[in-house]
Length: 102
Image (cartoon, rainbow, N blue to C red; front, side):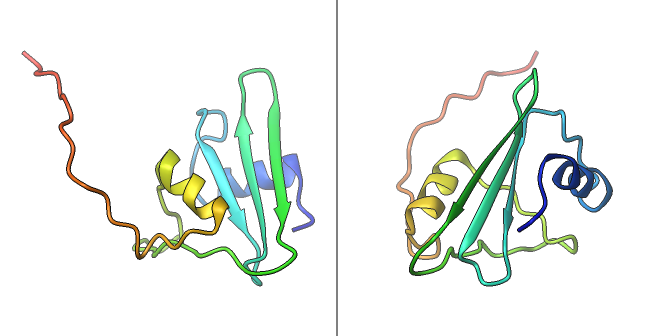
């Protein structure tokens, strides 16, 4: 977890094949699962959020891709940061309006 702005953005570009300037947030968790870094380009520069847990670990969502990349929603990220198990969270049905394309 010694990498900072340039190294993390390099990982996003080379390993993940993603555009670091897209506005997406990129999440990095260490091997012990007790530290997390969030990298975000905010339009005028990069921001990093770094948190180390004194006790406990972060749960990794299940990865289905070869690169280990996972897409998580804003709600899933908040649950992950709060230590709530994503495997046992059940989302209830809700109406979601989807505009029709003509």
